[in-house]
Length: 265
Image (cartoon, rainbow, N blue to C red; front, side):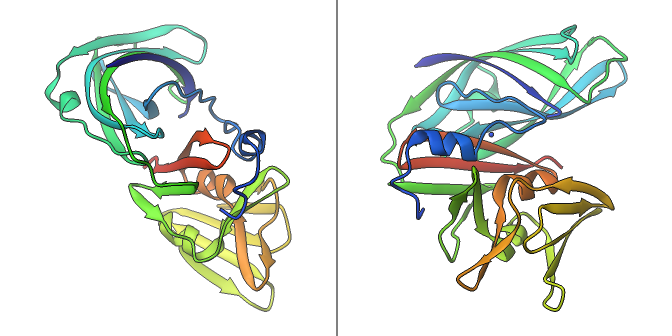
């Protein structure tokens, strides 16, 4: 049994096995829209919030970025604040049926819509602060060995060529990663331009350039998408967040890490 406490913000985180831990940290620093400091086996992160009558409903996700299996959550206390630090709501659970039935192996995630009756109304929900206290039961996990283990909505990504780090960003195979994120990929070989469409989101970028557009608005990748030894690569965090996903990172050793990507929609 372990108790952990975490504070974070959210609008709501293979060929390089010899790279030291600091390189992983550079490659996966906290996203611009959130700061995530993981403690213990399990993370809970809000993805969005909305008001329904006199209640606040927070769409959140449990994410296991550890090397241990989580068997259940026995106790949980959530306190929600707006971006200015004003408390909006708090709620506690003790041996709740959903939480005690929560079992997550490393890399797995589980969405959870949380209702807070009587919450303060009228707050700006674009930025939420959440403080939580959690008690969970875990068991040892044999692990998946060294390397970078990437999960997208509970599906393990098995890239056809190894990801690599460049200028502080991890680059992953372009087409297979974008398709795993739920996007339809169109490639123009004459202009070397890629268009990735996911629902109403349309991302367009050119190989070798940092500039990209999302629904016509310009954003900047940390490093450009690029072709290496005949394979196309894209920066993982930039692509994930541009397509409406949250990214979580658990660094276990200098040679082992778990990355979990969750669709905010």
